[in-house]
Image (cartoon, rainbow, N blue to C red; front, side, top):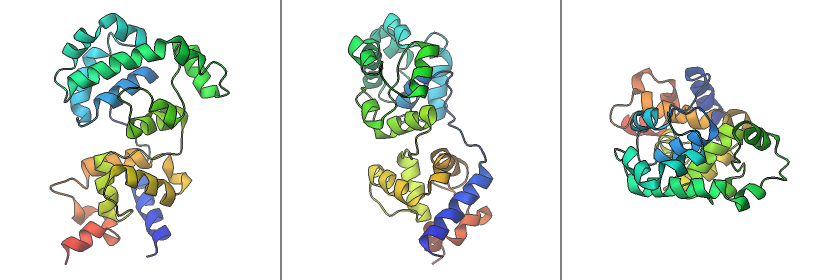
Length: 232
């Protein structure tokens, strides 16, 4: 099976498994989405949700973070890996979002979705990957998740799990998540990019797990590099 056919076969199957894949991080507004994704670095969604289920009852906006103060924020997320570093980044991130310089940089934007967020929530969130990455604690993966979810960007966020599953399946052959992200965005057709990130995450989480992948019940074993190696 040639590469294009293989890619279509994989994502058609993933779409059948997950018709409408969504992040399993809990959030109710754009600012909470950024916080949840920042907190999820090297931490499970399950653990993040335990923390944010309590935290998000009082945190709805950047102003709420400033009112909480960094010491209280640190205490609120201390069960999360790298909590001190993440608390500092979230606090500074919130200060930046409230700064006049940050606000004025988007006031003349032509992005309707960006303006819609401001009209509803009274804060701006950048709609460009490079602009999002200027915020503390927001790396490429976080920026791509936020840009994709909020603005429908045709990008594929790659964390460690998506990196591993993409190499297992043979979609790419790379050493680093950043390399995987760039290659996936080249080989995956636009029609699949709306769901590809979340579908790959869920496929890793519930089917192609690290220790006991469910190869026997998976249709992708026909094209899977990992399964072929196991079968040798």
